Image (cartoon, rainbow, N blue to C red; front, top):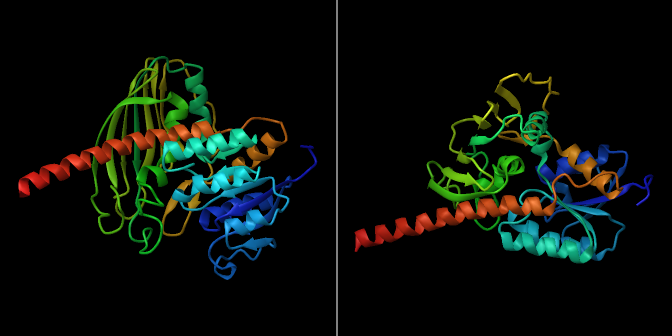
Length: 354
């Protein structure tokens, strides 16, 4: 692809995150937004500023044979994998908002399609671009902390009836998939990016405040071992009252300790390493603001830049499909444990009532 050619994008899904993608494409001088797609009428979407062709189904978009290099999928989680497969069958590169799919099998299908059609799959994991994330990655890769002993991941957010609306896809098992997929997969990705895969998973799960709002738990305490050594723990909840509390990672190593915290893992709170002085880090971007609630870092401009640079041969994809699959695989294994525990509880209850 020539360096002066603009990369042409289309977006499927024009909700909050789809509009974020649209804006980042719109602002990039090397990108051109050529189409938008959503099942809702255009008049309901507030997308008038983007003077591009609009479609109300992915099938109509793909049948039109427009000149499109990349399609960004910003739809409900449960639709990602199947829609990505349709796009790849048209030999178009695809950017997929997290998660790539709601099962390892679905993700593998996407990867196989990409391989067959020789196309890229870009998994959106924008927290990797936050200055504290870039810094800690360098620290780990250069073994500044030495051998890693323990890692604690804490994710405490608010998601109440302002977020979960009756009739919406959020909170449904089929389209949402669960708290770890929708709220906290970015932080599981950071953990995997730094320390690799996990094993020996154990956990407890609870639904404190969402029984009438969602099909799944709102809280969990998970322990595990890292395949490459060290042990870890993940505590998470969306039952926090009023507003988000924190997203943090604490790392205990042979040569020191580090904690990155704040509401969105955007602040270095502790750096205690003998003989090491932390460099001055760039200020982190604010979180994505959705009105009544907030999400992860607003780093989507980096995603679009990486897609363009990759397709123009300047660099490689920051988060590829295989890494996106591993995050889904970790969450799926945690949820298999959850479902197994739930079956045991139900069996005990049935025996008690018999």
